[in-house]
Image (cartoon, rainbow, N blue to C red):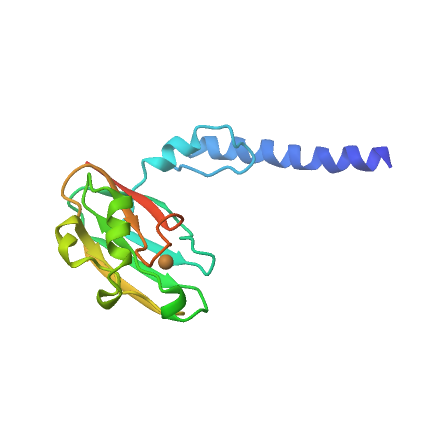
Length: 174
Ligand SMILES: [Cu+2]
């Protein structure tokens, strides 16, 4: 029994050694290595940008992804997918990207009373860079926008009560 256990541990170690030697040959390729969580890979990943943001809104009032990095001035596509099953009236979701410096909690509070506008506050339109439609179950919406200044932009779902858990940040870099 002991021998079998030792073997079982030895095999993955042998494999991972072989893998590391290989990846050293291709220094241009940044590989995500699950076997070394303490490596500096996270730093490298944080600086990677995307121009295609895909967010899934879930039944448990969460976004599946909450951190994105984009390039200043680049056209960004944001696709929101509502993965939930409850009706739009009970559990609608949207994604609203705010201008820098806007108080997200104050904005969410103002939005929560604007049911007739799908929770987009009319007197705070200037605080918004872009927003999706309010989505019912299995609905999607895609919007395009650009961020003109470097820095961090908050996004949230403005359906009443959702902003506490449905919020994230898009960081624009030069
Ligand atoms: Cu929501």
